[in-house]
Amino acid sequence: MSAIASSPATVHYREAFARLQPQLGGTASLRVAAMQRFAELGFPGARDEAWKYTSLRRLESRRFVPAAPTTTSVDVPPAFVAQRLVLANGSAAGPVPAAFGGFTLGTLQTAPEDQLLRTFVGGGTERFAALNAALTIGPLLLSTAAGQRSDDVVQLSLVTTGTGPTLASPRIAVRMAPGSRARLLLDHVDDGAHEHFTNAVLDIELGAGAHLTLYRLQRQGERAFHIERIESRVGENACFVLRDSQLGAALARLDTHVSLDGRAAGTEITGVFLADGSRHLDSHVLVDHRAIETTSLQDYRGIAANKGRGVFNGKAIVHAGAQKSNARQVNRNLLLTPGAEIDTKPDLEIYADDVQCSHGTTTGQLDPEALFYLRSRGLSEPEARSALTRAFAGAVMARVDEPVLARHVHDELDRRLVRLLEGSV
Image (cartoon, rainbow, N blue to C red):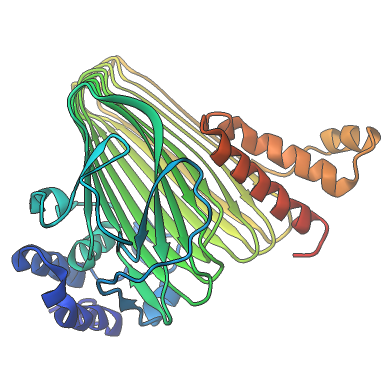
C-alpha cells in the first residue's frame, strides 16, 4: 500500500467505512471497490495540479464521522418553490415517495445499483466521488418518461447536520428520457452549529432531445467544508443548463464535467461566487465536445473581498471528429478589497479544424469613474460600490429564470456587500 493510502485521514475513513458498512445497503463489492479507490488516491498533495490553488490540509486534519441512516427531522429554511424534498445527511428525511414533481424516484431497494453507485474516472474530485460511493446512505434516482415535459421547478434541500463533526454524502442520479424536460433546484445548507463536511455527487444522463435546467445554491455555514462533483452526459439534440450560485462554506470545491456525446448536444454553465471573509471557493469546469455541431458556454463571475480567495478553472476540449462545434468561455472577476485573491485559468484543447472557440478572462477592481458618477447622483460610497458589484454579478444572474431564487441570491449579495463595504465585516 502506498504512503498516501496509509495516511491517518485515509485510515480514519476506511475504519469508519468498515464499521458502517452493514447499515449501508446494496452490494458490498461496489462499495468496497469505491473505498479502495479512495484509499489508493488519498487526499491530494501540494504537487497535484488539479489542486494547485486549493490546499486541503485543514480538511485532511479533521476526523469527520460519516453519517448513519437516520429518520430524525431537521430544520430547513423555507422552500423557494412549492415542490420540495428534504435530504438530511444524504438520505430522505421521511418516506421516499414513488413519484415527485414529475420525476419517478428510485432508491437502493427499487433502482439498479449500477445507476446509483457508479464510479467516475479522472478529474480532481475522482477520489471524493469514490468516497461518496462508498459511504452514501440514501442515494436517489430521479427519472422521467419519454416525452414528459414540465416547467415546474422541483427543489431538493440537502441538509448537513449533527451534534458533532459530520460527513454527509448525498448522491443524486438523474436520468432524463428522450424528449423530456425538467427543472431541478439543489439547495445545500447546514445547521451552522458545528464543522461539517459535505461530499456530494450529482450524476446526470440526458437522452436524445432532453432538456434539464439545474439551479444550484451553495449557502452552507462559515465552518463548513464542501466538495461536489457534477457529472453529465448529454445526448443528441439534448441540452444541460447549470445556474450556479456559491455564497457559503469556509472551503468549497465544485467540479462540473459535461460530456457532449450526441450530435448538436449543448450545455450552458453560468455561475457567480462571493469569496468574502476568509472563504475559499474553487470551481472547475470541463466540457468535452465529442460529436459534431455541439455547443457550450461557460460564464462565471467571481467576487472576492477581505482574505477571501476564489479559483476558476474552465476547460473545453474539442475532440477529433467534433466538427462545427462552438465553445465559448468567459470568466470575469472583481476584487473589492486589498488582500483578496482570485486565480483563473481558461483552457482550450482543439483537435478538429472546422470549429469556433474563444475564451477570455479579466480580474480587476470597480471602475472609479462609475463610482464617481453614482456618488454624484447622491449614493453613499458603500451604496455605490454595492450597486456596481450587483450589476457585475447581474450579467449572469439575469439568466436565473426562477424569480424567488434569483431574488434570494441578489438580497444575500446586497446584505453581505453592504456590511463589507461599511467596514463591519
